[in-house]
Image (cartoon, rainbow, N blue to C red):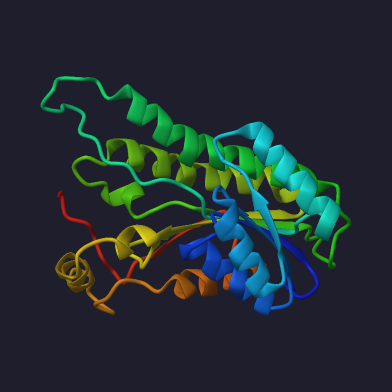
Length: 254
């Protein structure tokens, strides 16, 4: 699908993977809605790329509905949706204090898994009402973000791995269901990337994380995620699949 002149909405676009994706889509000619929980960061990126800024917490369905409605009113219903928003959490199943840790587990699933489902559903509803763009009947593309933790979850990542495993598992059934509307669904599972979270780590830890990646032995650049997102949008045969973007890393137990 051609990106030029399409409307796009990117969540978690105030920084990291989402910001890089918003920049790349805008450079390819898309009208981009920059959605982030942090309204200030969304405004910064939107001004930079000539897009519009939206603020919403992806765990709040009403806020997401309002954000998509605002995007449609300003730039048209998005034909490209890249969902990067999420949280990283760490909590053991058997912590030293003996607590069950349900609050962390439920919060992680609500943001990462249920939030993804709601974005997927709202985006699909909007796209299904659009006219097809080509002879294939293409109406739009939805890209979600899983994680290598989907398959390589480490100690303390039970909640995170479960949430990202759910995202990965939704990809094929969603693509099959939405195929009759000309809507493709893909997921990217990043490995170790430069993000606002990793930027706060001590340099020696960042270096050790990069060294653990077979090749290239460094943290991923967010634009490398964005380049894959662009390739997915542009290649009509990419559908219903989770792509690991990880430099061949396989995470150790801890």
